[in-house]
Length: 261
Ligand SMILES: CC(C)(COP(=O)(O)OP(=O)(O)OC[C@H]1O[C@@H](n2cnc3c(N)ncnc32)[C@H](O)[C@@H]1OP(=O)(O)O)[C@@H](O)C(=O)NCCC(=O)NCCS
Image (cartoon, rainbow, N blue to C red; front, side):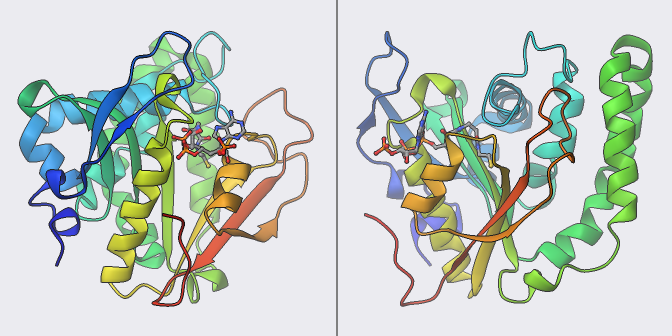
């Protein structure tokens, strides 16, 4: 088992500096560290705060949710979309850490599961935290609460296993701090995730994005992902995107699978 994948050493796949697309950003040394190792290094509170922040700043089809009036409860948003993974699948995901030790800062993540069917059952373990936060949001963030109720209703309706889980049982979510995007961090994170899935003998990965996500689509194509299915318009979670369609991408793994260096 490699140092990167067994979570004992983030340094094993730490690499060169990345430069973000933000005009003022300086070269930043990032280490790609597995979630369980990151939890030990910086602690749950700091790790989750970093995930909450990046999730919200990139959550509107790749753009910042802040100031849009859509889902302003950042913690509730992250409870739906990212916090399950450090809590229940810490040996599958990775973060990009800047700095060392307790003060290191999360600048990106690629989280997921090797087994979407198992995850669909296990995600119920988030219910107590979710419903507690929804009770808070009902009073303080009514707009977030309304969307949260729709998300919960949608999740309850999706009870049948997805047939595509057979060939592509793993799924992932990847988000990089906007200041560092297009500097190589996303590529290093997804490579670490793919390597971990290969190690677990997973045959394929799938993920969901949207036709509205102008950053993610070229990124996945460049990394060898192909369109698995495309949804109908008019099903956007977020108001103001009448033409948005869900896009599922997939990639077969295995010894012959190609990844970019
Ligand atoms: C998609 C994402 C994870 C890629 O991470 P990254 O660190 O920017 O990616 P890398 O630097 O390793 O790779 C850069 C490649 O990604 C794509 N890409 C990244 N940003 C892009 C942008 N603003 N416009 C077009 N393509 C972009 C391109 O293919 C680019 O290659 P190029 O520079 O040669 O054209 C990152 O842009 C991100 O976090 N976006 C917001 C969150 C998101 O949309 N996540 C996916 C949800 S499904």
